[in-house]
Length: 216
Ligand code: GTB
Image (cartoon, rainbow, N blue to C red; front, side, top):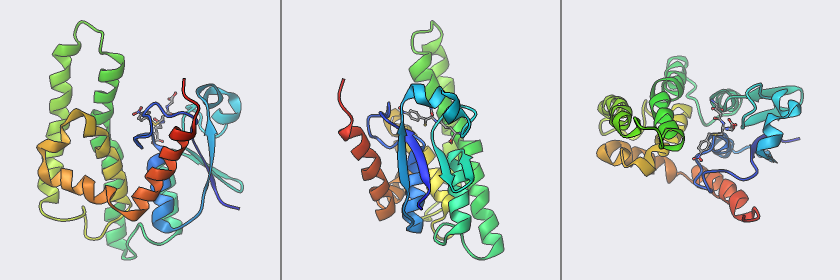
């Protein structure tokens, strides 16, 4: 039986592939493994049955036999460790690719999530306009450093890896802000990731969920 992941029944991103089932779907496609998706509503996510899979009441989750996982990065790592295509076989290169996975979710992602939170939740606060430039500058700081590392290379450390998959997934969240465009090599890096056939299949699958959902 194929593993089952959970995703939003109706994603607030309106099919832009920004919810965190997207990197998991992408990883399945990169390693060429089938998967099932169980769509959940917001109320289902907060119910005890779902919290047994993810104590934080969030998507995505992953179930295969008696194994259940949450955290998109951990799920991608699990797939990368079990199937070929997302981690190099050389032990040191593999460790470096895993380092980039952590860099994506623990160094790059926090200021990017902070911007999303500011725009959605803090927009009506009196201090919003004053704080926003600081939030954006913290992202620019990291983008500048990442851009310097990437240089003219296609991927972060040699061949495409799960590190790139997570990094591109995190950086995609900046499309709407315009910040990514300030760094030409990072824009091209994200475009390279988005052009991968596996990415496109995963994107189409999550978009199909949104377009099939009843409007209203
Ligand atoms: N660290 C966890 C992981 O990587 O798996 C974070 C999981 C997470 O944030 N899940 C979100 C969730 O379940 C969905 S992806 N939220 C419901 C809740 O917490 O109640 C985050 C997300 C949501 C919406 C957009 N969007 O609209 O653009 C983008 C990303």
